[in-house]
Length: 329
View (tube, helix red, strand yellow):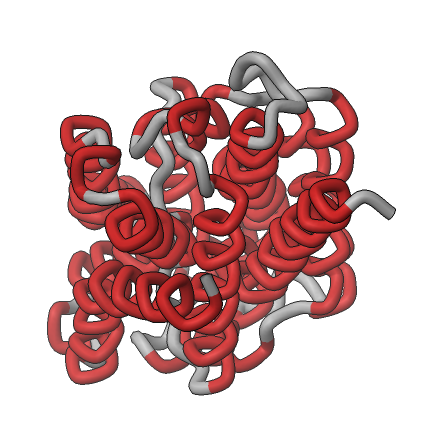
């Protein structure tokens, strides 16, 4: 087999492996609230999440183009394939470490940081499109703030509307509505997160001369969508436990508010072609909803550890990717 073809195949394998890991790492984003409130059984929730992830992943490509072309120009890199390999290995390692410890960190942050670090070491700072990098980071920072604010506002509105209703009756109704919001949340996860692996594969195809532009081929869409759906079907139970039980005690009305708030932020970002962290969006929405319910109900120590992970993911993954490139290439 031709060496270049083998290396390209390795890149595609690593990208799909990242997508698969992203699926089980981020399953909690879509189903943690509905599972914790028993709106859905774990098995049903995972099947729903995997199916909606697959559909969402097939329908959009804007984020993929953003990932593949906004940080650097793949056509101008002489060692682009090696850069992509270092990027994916670093992002996979960080995802597995945070999954093992049950920390809902961002796969998006890991991938963006790893790509920037690999390009910086492998090609030099001149090859990084700093304006594009900053734009993506701004979106990653702004989205959780919006999710927190929207979650807080939505929960306050719901409290006002249902203030005189029986909590049992209210939660019974919202437990059914959570099925819809869990499906919507899973769909938006696919529209944004699966695009990142598509972007990296397309990036590799361009830099290797097998593709002329960042238009995502159909086979790449199907492969990435399938990998994420399969990963989602396995589930990330450690992270589900953190998000569903350790931040605050979630009731159906809270789960509904958190899911609809986070999904709205994620889908808006997808329509703007911005890669955002689905993990940050849902976690922040849960924090916002919990604050509206009762500020003291939120376990801010757990939330603080999660936020610290948010801030360190990009620099750590960037350094890790740079080291991997140095060691192996």
